[in-house]
Structure formats: C-alpha cells, structure tokens
Image (cartoon, rainbow over the protein chains, first blue to last red):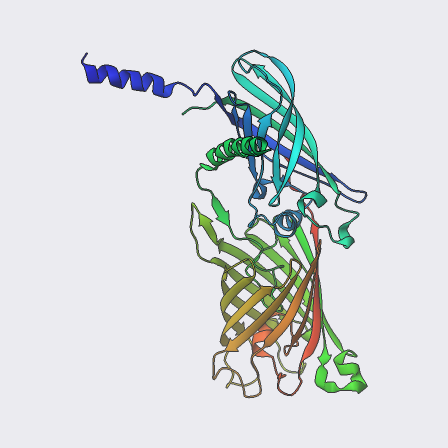
Amino acid sequence: MNFTCIIALIVLTFGQLPDAKLYEVDKGSVYFRSDAPLELIEASSTELKGLINAEERTFAFSVPMSSFEGFNSPLQRVHFNENYMESKQYPNATFSGKIIENIDFTKDGLYTVRAKGRLNVHGVKRERIIRSELQVEEGQIEVRADFTVLLAEHDISIPKIVHQKIAEEIAVEIRAVFLPKMP
Amino acid sequence: MLFTLGSGSVLYAQEDDLLALLGEEEETIEYANASFKTNRVINLHSLESTSAGVLDIKISHRFGTLNRGAYELFGLDNASIRIGGDYGITDQLTVGLGRSSYQKTFDGFVKYKFLRQSKGKKVMPVTAAFLATTAIQSMKWQNPDRENYFSSRMYYTFQLILGRKFSENFSLQVSPTVVHRNLVKTSAEAHDVYAVAAAGRIKLTKRVALNAEYTYVLPDQLLPGFRNALSVGFDIETGGHVFQLHFTNSTSMIEPGLVTQTVETWGNGGIHFGFNVSRVFTVVRPKIQ
C-alpha cells in the first residue's frame, strides 16, 4: 500500500464521519391552529429544516410558508399565501438564536431549555424566548416546542369582516428529530 | 456598552451562518397560482380551474343597457340571469353546468388544464387549458309546423386558453376559439365561427382586481350588425366569495352568445351593467397530516 493510498483511506474514513457538533433535522413538522369563535383552521408542514450547533448552542429553523397543507378549503390555503403571509415576498418563517441553558448534548436525558432568538414571520423579526423540550437519546435529539404567535406583532392584518373567523393568537407546535449532520 | 453591542452582533452572525447553511437546499418546482381570482374573467373562462373537491356556485346577472335611460333606470329594470355550478374533479379537471335565461339556454363544459406555469426546478412559461362546451337553446320553435330537429338547438365551443402570470399584479391570457352552430338563419352565416379572445387582470389591492376581456371575431363570418364583445370590471374577493362587477356589451354570458350574438356597442351606450357572484363550497375536505 503506497502513501497516496493511505492518504485516500484517511480522507475517506474521516470524510464519512459525522460532524460532531452539528445536528440536522431528519424529520420535522410544524403545525398551527387558529381557534376563532366562528372557525377553526388547522394546517401543517413536514418541510421543516433545522440545525443545532451543539458546541456553540446556537440553532436555526426554517419552514417554507407555501408548504403548509390542511386548511378548511383549497381557497383558504390560497388566501393564506396570497393575502396574509404574502409567501412570494416572504417565502420562509425562521427562528434562529441561542439556547440559554448550558446542556451537554453527549449525555442522554430530557432537558427543558429556553431558546432565545429572533422569530421571523411575514418578514417581521421579533425577539422571542421559547420554552422547548429536548430529548437526547443515543446521539439523536428530539425537539418539542409549543408557543403562540400574535398576528399583530408580525404585521399580519385581519380584515374586520373575518375577525370572528381568524384568531389573533395562533398556536404553533414544532416537532423535530435531529441527527448528526453528515458533512 | 460597546462590548455588549459587539458580542450581540457576533451572536447574530453565528445564527445567520446557521440560517444560511439551511438555505443550501435542492431547488423545488414553484407553480404560479392565483393568476385570476376565479375561473371566469368576466364572461370568458380564465386559465384557473376549480380546486379538487370544491363546488363553485355562480349566480350572474346582466341588466339592460345603460342607453335605455332614466325611464328604465339605465337598464336595471331588465335582467338576464345565469345560474350555474362548477366542480373540480381534480386540480386540473373541472366540469360545470348552467342555465341562462337569455334564449333559455342550458350549457355544460369540461375544462382540462394540461400545462401549469412554473419556475425553479421545472420551468414552464405558460399555463394552458382546453375548454369544450355544449349549449342547448330551449326556446319554443319559431315555426312549429315545419320539421324541426333537436340538433338545431345545439352549439359547441372549443377553446384553447394560454396564459401567463407575468407578476403578482399582472396576468394575461389569449384564447383561440371556434364556435360551431348547427343551425344558422341564412347561408351567408358561417356554421363554424373563429375568434380570438384576450383577457387580462391587474391586481389593485390584495382583494380587488381590475379585469378586461375582448373577443375578436375573424371577419366575414357573421352578418353585419354583430359586434365584438368588450367587458371591463372589478373582482372583489371576501373569503369564500368573489364578487365580479362589470360593464359589457354582451347580453349572453356563455361562449356561443358572446362570440356570435353580441349586437350592442359601447359607442352608443349599449352597455350592460352586471355581476357574477361566486361562492365556493368544500365538498371533499383536504387532509391534514
């Protein structure tokens, strides 16, 4: 075995090794619910993307608004994208920041943490602290976070005529399984 | 103070790096949607289809012409009506039925969208749909003594709709059309009438759009006195309803009448005020994962 071969072997071996500090969403979903007096609207997306940097305890999530499905009618989905979220202009909702608690991602266990960062919905960024549960098990991280978004805080206006049909506060549920990111 | 500011920006820089990392994803196909507010521009079919599992009930009125003057309240004393329903079998295939008071006409159509405008991974510059309609006029025979055939009541229309949403605010479509009439009054009139229709919309606000459509009938097919139809109007959308308010010189709201039976002109005030009300009902509810 000559020198180049050994080099190639080393590159191959280490090249395939996961990046120890970066975790990536393997399966993720976002669900939201608008519970207004006259109408309940629910939709979800399974196109949630996300990264956690375990060393720096930073994270980033992103979901394309046009990937939400459900709603009470196809037209409602069109209106969601066209009139409320303006998805062509603001294609993604994102949340990125840092985990406040100093937790050890190498130790299995259930951690309740506060994720502090900027929530960007409809192009409007808001500082938020969101309580999340992290279940670390055999190198994978399961994230569960339930929070609410105030439409007014993100400049999403509701016409008077549909006030009774759209809630001012939208409940959001995030579920994601993170695996070490392959380089 | 300076230190805090500095560390803050470093923190955000790190997060933005992570966000940027997320951005490195494969391209997806992005379809154009909501080129028009509903599947009709005014009288013409737009390139839009009714979504799968949705029933769209349409009630349309055309009042008399404005030039009838104050005695007939500028046409409002007279009204012609069409009641119809469209149903989306799939997102591409729509069927519909209707009945117009104008010449007591029943109509049915099938519309199939075979190309969808898209960008991203798959680039398609236009949306294209094919429309086939049948209309059956059910007026009493003018001359019951002679031998009358049911087929004389039938009209067929075939139309290709080619359109593009140029921007969020501007959509345009062109529709080559042929109307076949089984029976014509004189031999000087063509059985097959060829026309080209064009329609566009400008979105004024999130919920209001300005629409216009024009049907150009190729020359030497109709008798003198028949005109091209021009219609201009607004779409106002409120949740499940679309209200279309417009002015048109066509009395009929369906293709055979629109193309071959328009006699009024804009020039002398032969303009009908009219409206279409569209209300969608979800018959099959979309599933949530």
